[in-house]
Structure formats: structure tokens, C-alpha cells
Image 1 (cartoon, helix red, strand yellow):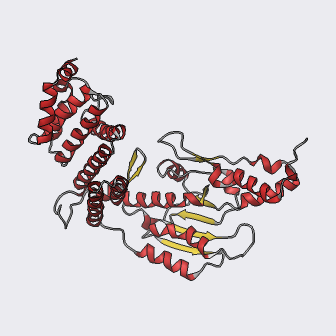
Image 2 (cartoon, rainbow, N blue to C red):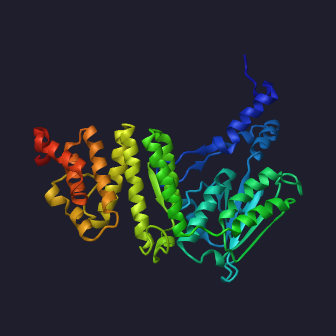
Image 3 (cartoon, rainbow, N blue to C red):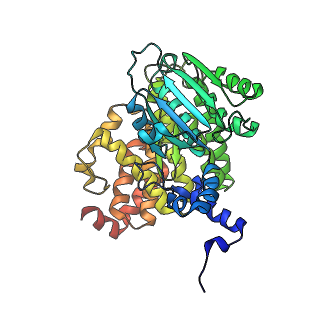
Length: 412
């Protein structure tokens, strides 16, 4: 018996079209940590026949697309690589694309005209990632936004002059509350609701938190994570620590940490709070190392040894690379000859000495659980350099020295 697709009930065909053509199902995960996700729409179904084209086109049009246009070609690459914003299409096809609900046009009025514009198309689900990337860029390069002009145009791409529902207007415009202090800003089209625009402009007028305020928020979140850790609510602890990272403009996604807005913290000292008078960038380093140590401790409590070791080892390797770039990723080798960089960091006055000692020791605990004896030996000895009077570290050293197997591993 021959199966005929068009013999299926219309509602089943609609579901099939949706499964093939909606942004959610067309999204492909990143191939690695250095690239954003991507989209693959199987548009061949649109060429099946006239009826299928008519029916499936409606499913594709249910997607909410956004077009971004600038006079700078390098901006498109920056949005994708630095912002990790998946691009649906770019180049001539994006220039010709008309089925968007929001058009974002960015330029610099004072800059000489370039004569050519460059466009890309993204999905509405990725709009917050775009505005976050823009916010971080402005924080990193103080004074960027006062040179930029932003024009937002709302439209229903399928019915001219039809009002876009308030919920969708809000979803399209609210992310731009992060974009502040522009040279000029305008939004219009599709019967824009005054309440939506007023809410957006109110958010744009709210100043960015100062570094002092960022550290207060991070401290509050870190302390809440510590309380959750003590209560053995480990999922809540990790969430609080993740939010504490975000408060100082560091995003955590799985095993990756992305550090943003370095320029926001450089060249200034804190004027209030527990760290008053200290360089802001130094205090941020202290917070970063504290939060890494807390992540490791949480994974140790959960007995997730691989996660604890990963977080610790990654931070140690990155720290070492700044002091002694000739090493690889291993933490073995001879401690006396290969770990001089530890003593160097102490002599240089590394601002997070105590916290770094905890990172070394807690990573050593994970290494021990996983059977990496040589690694544990080195890590505990390194921890002693930072925390020479810590009783737990002293006990671990004594235990290793009394263990014949560890002595052999350390000298192998």
C-alpha cells in the first residue's frame, strides 16, 4: 500500500512542518567550545509541490526573525565569535531578507560613511545573547555607546501595518534595556505601544552598577551559596556561585568560563566597602579565585571528583601559563624543579594567595580520589607554599610522607 503524505490529517502535517522548520528544532549545538551554535533549516520540503509549499511556508513564517545591519563588516564576525550568537544567514541573502519582525540598524553618525552595509539574521531566542555581548563591549571599551546610533523598527512581515501583540513587542524590545548612553536611539513601527517603549527607555536610563556595587552583589550571592553548601543543597550552591560570577561579568556555561568587561575593572581603585583603596582588577581576581575554590569544594562534597579536578586543574594551568608558559596541561613533573612558578607568584604578591592555596589543596583531594598520586603530591606541596600553617594541608603532607606508595610516585 502506497503512503501518501497528503492523506495525513492537516493537523499532523502541520506538526511535521513545525518539527522541520521551527528555529528550536533547526538549532544545532556548538561543535566545540570556541564556536556558537548554528541553524540548519531543511527547506527542501518547500519545493515538494504547490500544496506542501503553501502549508509548510506558514510553519516557517511562525518563526520570529531579527535582522541586524551595520556599516562595519567586522561587527558581524564579532557578534558571532565574541558574542557566540548563532547566525541564520548573512551576506546578500541577509540583505535581501524581508521576513523579520525586528530590524536593528546600528551606525555612528560622526563616522565617515562607508557606502556599504552588512547584515545578518538571527532568531529571537538569541537576541538576549546579542544585547549582552553589546553591553560587555561597551563596558570593556568605555565610551563606545556615546558614538553609536541605534534604530529599531518593528513590523509584521506578513501583514502590512498589523499590530504586533504586546507580549511579542516586549520580548523584542526588553533586551535593549542593557544598551545605555547611546548617541541617539529611536524605535518605531507596527503600532508600538507607549507602555512598552516607556518601560524600555526607563531601563536604558538606569545606570550600570559601579564596580563597588558589583562586588557587593557578588559577595551576597557567594555568601548565599556558602549557606546552601553548609545545608547540603549543592545545586542551589552552584547556582548562587554562578550568579556571583555573573555579577562581576563572568559567565559560566558548563565547564567554560567567559570573562568579559576587563576594561571596566582596570585603572581604578575601589572607593567604598571592605576592599576600599585596592585596585579593582585585583579584587576581581580575588573573587574569581574564591568562587573557583567554592565550586571545587561543592563538587568534592558531591563526590564528583572529575568535576572538582577539572575546575581546579583548569584554573591552575591557566594561572601557571601567565607565569611560566613553557609547561603543558599536566600537573606532574618534579616539584622542586618544575614548580618554581608557585614560589614566584608568592614573591610577586599575588592578591589571592590564600584562596589559591585552597584551590591547590582541594584539587589535590580530587586527584587523590581519582588515583593521581604524583599530581596530588605536587598540588599539596604547592598548597603549602600559599598556606604554610594550614592544618589540613600539614596533615595531608604527613599522610603522604608516611605512605610508601606516595613516596615512590613522587620520585618516579
